[in-house]
Amino acid sequence: MAREWSYWTSNKLQILGDYVPAFNRASKKSSERLYLDLMAGRPENVQRLTGEVIDGSPRRVLSADPGFTRHVFFELPSKAEKLESVLRNEFPSKDFRVVPGDCNRTIDEALTRLRDYRWAPTFAFIDQQAAEVEWQTLAKIAQFKGINARTKPELWLLVSPAFVARGVSGRKSQAFRKKVTRFYGTRNWLNIQEAREARSITGRQYRDEMVNLIRFRLAEGLGYKFTQRIPMLMTNKSSIYDMVFAGDHDVGDKIMRHLYNKAAEREPEMIAEARRLTAMQREERSGMYSLFELPSAEPDVKGEVLWQSAPYWQPASREWWTERDVV
Ligand SMILES: C[S@@+](CC[C@H](N)C(=O)[O-])C[C@H]1O[C@@H](n2cnc3c(N)ncnc32)[C@H](O)[C@@H]1O
Image (cartoon, rainbow, N blue to C red):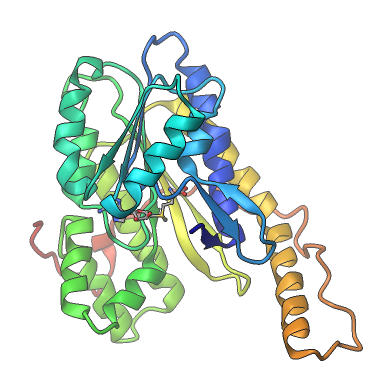
């Protein structure tokens, strides 16, 4: 069964679809280029409002031109077999593996099998929902090319404080908190959580601080030279998640900044269209048709500067911060 997606997923995947050929063009002198997809998903999904079928990351990446030379798709066993059979059928000449299981457990063996290509430019997409990936897994990927490598594998990571906030207040809160600690690799995220629970910070500040903390860790813990974030907005303009990029090469950073700008330019139109379709569907369901016009699909913010690169800050600079153990 295809999963239902919202417009922000299409926007995210368009960034991926544009970045992959740009990355491979920029690295074309290298005879090998590696792609790791830690949460590969299904071959295709359906846009919730339009019913449109949208290709998932594996299809987009395997059909990129120029593309990577070797690919590893990690996915839970329940979906891995189907993913593999669809991709083998569609891309018989491509070099890829589908690795079934928890990527945090299968990463070691997968990286060991790639060790002869450690020198190759490498890109990892980590399309989690809340906090499924562990910090140790990110660290293993970052260290894959060895300490003397000029550039580490690039990481493109979904970070969703909104989903974390939901999990933390859910029924299995304690287990979920441990999972979030494994994602950040430190208990320091609890400073932000507690500041929010004490109403010392707003929901917006909570999201910003949670995304900032992972950027700070990627830069100062793993040594990434560049990190960027782009929030993906819901129709109420609050962010559902951020896409965080970490890399060491200024060309990769420049391309990603350009694509983040493009994504921010597309977003208002996507939001306006989603609002219009939601209103139409509501009317259809209720059988009551408005005497007034449906919301226009014209975005109201054309021409604004919608995204700008901003540096991360020292998380510990906040007065509510107490340093906790790194786990
Ligand atoms: C948001 S979806 C990924 C969508 C996909 N990247 C795409 O573009 O279609 C997240 C996927 O991660 C998988 N997943 C969750 N936890 C995982 C884990 N620990 N290891 C591997 N896959 C996992 C889920 O089964 C789900 O298919």
